[in-house]
Image 1 (tube, one colour):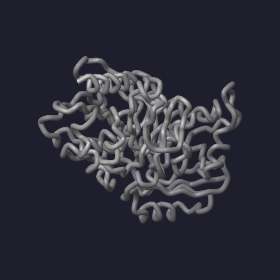
Image 2: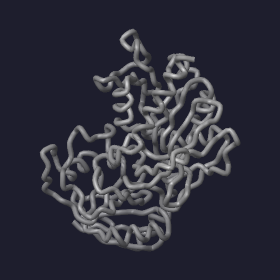
Image 3: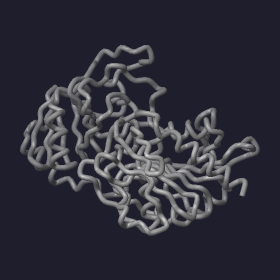
Image 4: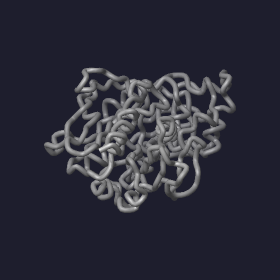
Length: 372
């Protein structure tokens, strides 16, 4: 089934839908990962976006329940060069098309993804419409230009409806820690668009995790008497998120805090800094990041379109990591409080495991604070 994509800059590209009829409008971005397409699809940070995969062949190993990073699929459309309809992998329990149809997501193949990626790199992330029904290129471009874009609080659309616990048995409904958690580190995780592997890694390191919605008050979190607070990833413009920065600011200096991706940006705003939008973002499993303290270079998994401006940070914040592609800020720590954060995804899923040690750093920080 023929599909057309119209970009706000006037570009029109043709492809074919492998999921049936459909239409989507969103912010079009590209991801450079060579694998992990199911984890990309189930990352809430992609809410409101249409994702183009630069790797040319997608779908070859199918999908399965174990690789879900959340309970849903978030991109509005999934775009690729070539779709592999018949998967070949012992873990596969279904096809990529099955997963997309289940969540009513349009899948389009046959695109010149190299050209599309070069356009986005040159002109920046932009608004786009993809359709199997409206095959008038001028109409699609006009509609893309008229769409207001992602100018609202996107975290509100993906955060958990209520609190739940995550243990070595998986998700359990409820709030609070109990006698069964004695001897384990108690972590409260703010869900701005959290991925399951963040929770799995914390549990493997001896933590019991209480997940709370994004707007949960700092006083309610402290009433749980946690050993640490974790700030997750999430979608959208950090400056557009309502009622989160104030709570993060109120937690500074109370317990150890570890933030990643949007959580990192929330800390930057809580410190008094500012954020800005990157031209085409960092999305993929091959972003080089340098640890300024050790000189070590990590290959990292990333998914973000905004960045903290290091020049806006106060003197008691130290920059710890930078991106080697563009020099942007990738990590920071507070010099007086037990708080640190990184812009990338140390939980991988998908991506390299180079940065998983940061969870060990968080655990060590919590144990040191316990022993003070």
